[in-house]
Image (spheres, rainbow, N blue to C red):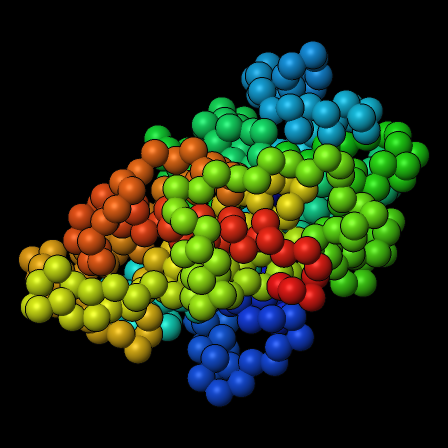
Length: 404
């Protein structure tokens, strides 16, 4: 089983794109937001160059502490348990990419001081990757059904219990089918273009095991409408648990570096959370500070964070910090006066805990205080710490879905 699709059809669902933009479920875009969303979709239709490559492994071995794929050893407890419980006999390795064009265009929009266009392109790129992954799963389901097999949910390096450092060896197993220069793995484990994904889909001939173990059914988290191979309905995950479902005894209260009084106030006044159907959470935090020069001019930055579902430990999937659309106070920062938009591009690309569970912020060593500006890396790390701690505090105090 192997295929390369150099021009996959991209039909990003409007509801999924709206979710990634941070709007609540059921929201209908209008006005400026609708104009930007349509523009981003049309731009990508004209200029985007997505692609997908997949191949079945030649050999799979599952031992006590690792998974061996074609002789390459991956230490992921989550992947190993999933494959073992399903009786998987093989895996399909998949690489998808929205292409470099959308990332480059978003960067140009940022340099041209068009943050709205930047953001809508960034989120559409993420939506394309989700769509390509979903369509790859659907294509595999179609093939596997004819072979009396079932496909398991995909898993990727950087997800909980799988070190992102394994991106490089996984890419090595896929490189033979990927055109040279179209995808690379950076030293950090991140991919370039960043709107790309490497994943592993398990294959099993024991479809009965998948039916009994609901967490092994990919259909629960697959938004592909009208799939003829669907085994269970697409479930819109609920946030929190009823009192009867909560484990006992309760976990110890987290220890924050900031005062709970401040966290409570920021969670109420500066933070908004929305959740989509597959359990991902989108957070928007509004930070208000002052410059370190020009008599302390006020400035406002927006922090947008995407978290994976609770059962995965709320992994940090996306992080981006940009000036609020209505703010130009950042232009008075001393470093901006020296570096200009290069500083802003640096800030937008900083992702200090990307790929790690949200709990990682509780043990993250960072400056405990910082100025209100964004001139120095230490000041920016301090702000990311307070943003992520506020999100952690807010999520840990939500008890019912309606509170989100």
